[in-house]
Picture 1 (tube, rainbow, N blue to C red):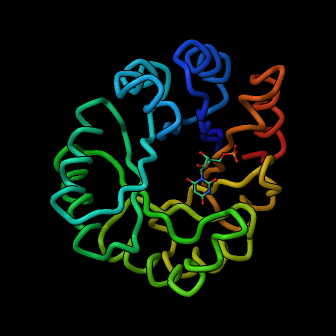
Picture 2 (cartoon, rainbow, N blue to C red):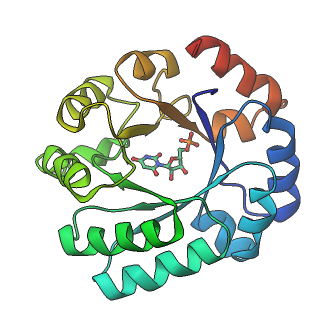
Length: 212
Ligand code: BMP
């Protein structure tokens, strides 16, 4: 385990595959979201899945039936996991968890987002969402590397059974080592890797810093 997830927010296939190939030995999974999938189509998931498990970051946030349809598409496309919001409520989350169980895939739930605005609306509900993720049988939660103290708070709520994946390292100011020490299982890193002259070196440095 490297404790590192690549956030592959480049928008074209050629760069995506080049960077994914370069860093594949340092990352445990590749997170793809709207920037790449809207640029290249959902087919890119299958291509990347040959290099590493793919986490589909669609921040699903809809009624249960629509969530179900989205999850089915994403898992049929070859994604290993999906990221969903939690603020839409337990029934919506249950719908994603049910599809994930049918496909034997993973579900991660956003608790509090890493950017400055992430405290405005998420702060009062982050703990409740974390508890709901645990109750619903999600695989884990997304919590901010920009605020390791919040990762510590959320770890206390979910216990050791759920995973914490944590974005906000590097470009957003968070430290990989600090958030791993605070209880995250994986850091999610995008720009510091894919904008580097040597993505492989950048990924290796982050792995060395975490020593995990
Ligand atoms: P970067 O390392 O370039 O800041 O990228 C972080 C990635 O994690 C982006 O894909 C972003 O959409 C995602 N993300 C985040 O930064 N904060 C969150 O709270 C949740 C996210 O999914």
